[in-house]
Length: 497
Image 1 (cartoon, rainbow, N blue to C red):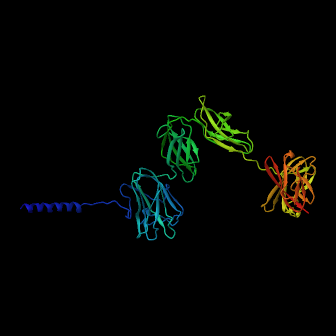
Image 2: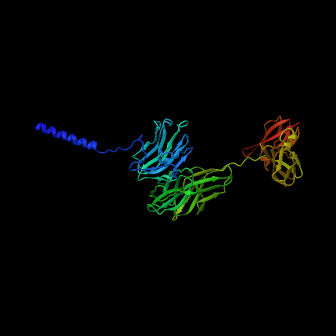
Image 3: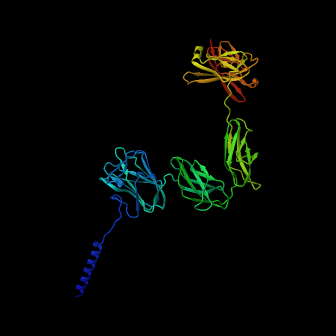
C-alpha cells in the first residue's frame, strides 16, 4: 500500500512539472542569424538613412519602399573603399542586414581600433542580425564597417541596434582625450577627427566647467604651459569641421605637481644672416636670458635679455654654427636652461664671375657657337640704367653699377644669366663672352684680385694668367676656375676660330 502511495505522488509531481514546463511561455534572446524585424527590449534601432551621425563614405546605393527592410529602406554597396562610420555611447551593438548568396564572405567591423568580421553569405533573408558585440565598456565607441572583398558582390547596412539607454554621438566628436604632466606642463592628446581644420582646447578649474576656450591648434596634441604647481586643471576638446564646432570630448584632469623650471619648446629658424628664436612663455617670468655657444653643451654666453618670448640674432655670418638656450627670470631668480637648439647659417649662393665693362663699352654674349641662334632667345637686363642688351645678345654698358643679363628660350625650358659690372677704366675685362683665338680678356670675382687663385681646366682651349687674364687658344668650351678664401667658383669660356 505504501509503495502504491509513493508511486502516486511521484506521478503527480511529474504531472505538475510537465504543466509548469509546457504550459509556460519561454522567451529566448535573438542571436546572430536570427531574423529581427523590431529591436528587442533593452535595445534601440537606428536607420542609417537620414542619420547625420552615421557617415557613409564611398559609393552606396539606396533601396526604398521595400516592406522587407527596416523603415522600408536599406543602403547596399559593392565599393571596396566604402565605409559606414558612427560613434555611439553604450555597451552593445548589433548590425541588421541581409543574408544572401550575392554577399561577400567577410565584412569587417572595427570598434575602437579592434577589428572583427561577419559573413553575410547565406540563404536569402532580410532584417537579420548579421553582427553582434556585447560587453563593451560604458563609454563612447567609434565603429567603422567596410569590406575589401566586394566587387561582384555587395553588402548592406539596414539598421543599427544599440543599448536602449545609449545614443549616437556626433561623428566629429574628438575621441580618447588623455592628459598628463610632463616637465611641469599639461600635455594633451586625442584622436584626430577627419576633416577637422582646427581644435578648441577648453579649460576649467572645476570638473564639468564652466570651460573657457583658451587655445586653438591644428594638431591633435597640445602642451599647456600656463599652469601653476599644486593645481588641478580640467580639459575638454572640440573640433571645427566645415566651420562648425563639434560637441566637447570626454573630460580629463591634470594635476601639476611641480613649478616650471625652464622655458619650453625653444626653436630656431635661420636665414642667410639672422637666426629667429622662439619659445613658450613661463608663468611668472619677468624676463628671459638668451644665451649662445659655438659648441654643443658648451659654455653659454648671455647674448640678450628680453621680456618677450622671441629674439632675432643678427650678429652672425654665413657658415657659422651656433647653439642656443634660454633661461627665465622668476621672482628675481634665474631658472635652469631650456632645451638646446643649433643653427648653421647656410652659405650664400656662390658668387658668379661677372663681365667687367667700361661705360659705353659693348660685349657680345652667346648661347652657342652660332651667333645667329641668339635671335631664338629673349634677352633682358635687370637694370637697364646700368647696361642694356639687344635682341641678339649684345650688351652695352651705360653707367657704373651692376646688372644681370638674362637669355630665355622661346619655350621657356632654358633661362640663364650673366652678371655685368660696369666701372671706369676696366681695361677690357671680359667674362663668358665669345672669344676668338688669341683674344684676351680679364675675369672679375672681387676687388681684392690678389686673393684669387686662377686655373683653366683645359689649357688647350683657354689659358688663364695669375691676374685673371684669359686667352682663347682653340675652338671649344673650357671651364675657368677661381679659388677665393677656400671657396671654388667656375665660369665657362667659349672660344671660336
